[in-house]
Amino acid sequence: MNAALSLGAARRHAMAQLGGISPTPAADTDHLLSAATGLTRTAFRARPEAILEAPARERFEALLRRRLNGEPVAYLTGTRGFMDFDLRLDPAVLIPRPDTEQLVEAALEAPASHVLDLGCGSGCIAIALARAWPRARIDAVDASPAALACARANATALNASHIQFLEGHWLTPVAGRRYDLIVSNPPYIGANEPEPHSGDLRFEPRAALVSGPTGLEALNHIIHSAPAHLTAGGRLWLEHGWQQGGSVREALRAAGFKGVTTRHDLAGHERVSGGYHEAGA
Ligand SMILES: C[S@@+](CC[C@H](N)C(=O)[O-])C[C@H]1O[C@@H](n2cnc3c(N)ncnc32)[C@H](O)[C@@H]1O
Image 1: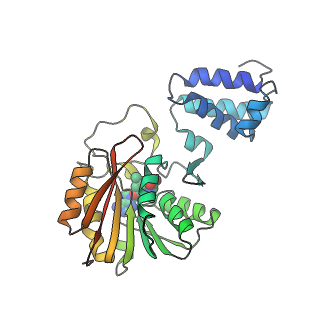
Image 2: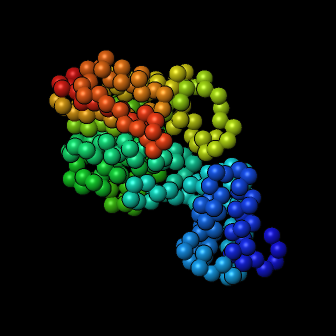
Image 3: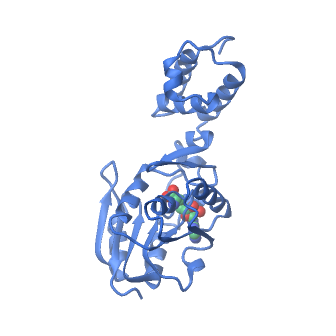
């Protein structure tokens, strides 16, 4: 880019380059320009002739180089919207997906007072439920201390400090506790599936993405362990891969769940399944 560069020219230049690597070059450019300048998208669109001054321009060019190398926008800007709030993110946590909002919507269909989120990552699910149910007791577990640090910071910033965050393997840290709702978006990619050559997955923590050889291992573990932690009639909702709906429903029924049902994501794929357990176990 040359010496004096307007916001409009910087935007056009970046969009043209990002068109080669991103399906959303305009949105990516706006997020990066906003992070570099501190201006809202509306502000820099309203003044395309304004000059992008040196410090902001250097920040923008550095962010653009990293984006052209494939790094996800959410890690570059350190933020991602989920439901009706913004989360702070770092590369220790999965970038929350719009599909996961379907899991939250399913969970919110009936009230709950004791809630558990397994594999909380950034805290997106637990925080969404905590904001909807300020009086609920909400526990959130993750095996990653770095993810828990991120989730705790988000919960504090978003006035969801009634969540208790616990470190450990799935239900181990909540021995003896029962819930009327358990939710989880566990890792569900199979270790034998081909490594992605493009997209955000290459930069996200492997432990957040990959379960065992088939991808169903964490889901099955949670389904089999959950009844001992559910109150009578307690519900379990799980996010899963778009081709895993049949296996997850089968595992839920085999573990004694009733009313087993599946919800679809925005692309129309099976994505979230759940049911209730009459007796707990
Ligand atoms: C797919 S990410 C979901 C993160 C977040 N809930 C979301 O929806 O964006 C799965 C999470 O499970 C955590 N995890 C993986 N194995 C675990 C285990 N054995 N016990 C507890 N958490 C685990 C990972 O650290 C990661 O944060």
